[in-house]
Image 1 (cartoon, rainbow, N blue to C red):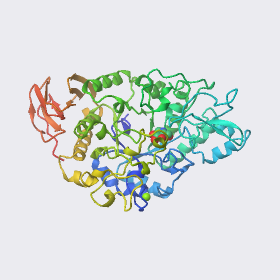
Image 2 (cartoon, rainbow, N blue to C red):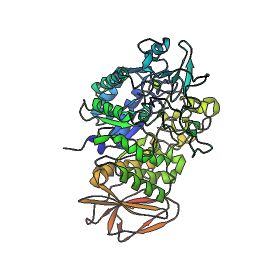
Image 3 (tube, protein in one colour):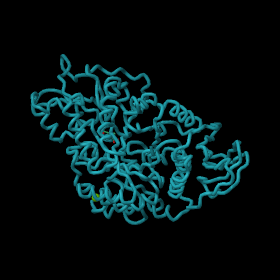
Image 4 (cartoon, rainbow, N blue to C red):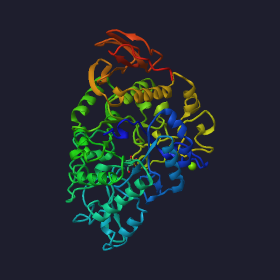
Length: 534
Ligand code: NOJ
Ligand code: MG
């Protein structure tokens, strides 16, 4: 049987508010994404994952949904969505939606009904508890957005649980009616033709049935988000979650060739459990470990080895370099290393996910206090996510070509000098490096599906092979600003360098790396055609 499409795909995350505004309200929308499809085709990605586009009061910018089967008017209409799906499919792009099953908006009719009385039919759709004996919260669980995860609600005099904002009450997934309703939501979109889902905080779905207190976290460090004071032993990653994931997967499997991705922040040994017994869990439990590992050749090598070793038999790996919740990679590791990171992401074994704008090195933007949008930043100053959600920088024109009016978040100051138009015209740009890397990945079986075999992680150089029976590549990455050399086992030809044109250079037993350079070498099968400059 042929491999499913998502194994050889490059995924591209769009944060719809910030990609392209088509109706001059300063907020990106679906028609805007349609306008930019040619850009995505030229970049060479295979699938788009859209952060939530559904009806929402936007307390958490769409991760608080008040109607799962309606498009929020800010983004357009259902007809606009159908048009996007049709046009994306027509140019060979898949579309993956964000599915947010853990919580709804407090404005969702289900929650309104639930909070109205203790004995209404929807009461048990959410997680209601009496206060502790003697008063106070039902237990010590903390919200990821600061403070207690319990909010007292007057009409019926109980607390409800919310892992995030009080405006995002958690659904009670122990209730079969909730499960059935949410499965129907999935069917609604799958039936319209979407190619899969990225499931928001899937490891949170079910909580301890006894609501035991979470223990303190002995490794808590100053500066960590406040909820890290506890180990979420009883509020997340419960054993029962795997049955729920299995059910989500079986709904997805009612439709051919669809993809199920889980958003999961867990240590690798627990992350890989989400592939499920017999691989009947999510296809891809998002692997965020590159976002959290020090940018150091040996640390990254250890991480890859550990991840590869932990993968269950037959499980397909994946790698993520950035997303709408974490600081921009180009700011975290610097512009020079962002090129090395691009090569790493696109040469590792497994499906890569690229966050919009990282292909032009968008920087983390400092947001002035009066323009802060993110509720997390408002609750816990300094940890907010606005800085990695600023508008895409398309050109040097007004508002960077993102909108005709001032955008919802400020643009980076550098937009006139750093944008798609100028990087597109510069053969040495990061954007063109991404295009070449994606193109090479598409052409070389070793990169798409070859084995990963480590060669060395010495000093600042990480080197590994990607190989199939008849395609053999060496990837060598210099994580620092000095020159470096490594011995290679057989002669080869440089296919691509991250810094300057070395394509076609023959290398015999020793490869020299320039500062901050990554190189892909075709090995051992005689002289191979170098990639062209574009
Ligand atoms: C994870 C999402 O990625 C994040 O943006 C959101 O705030 C929380 N889940 C709550 O839905
Ligand atoms: Mg708009």
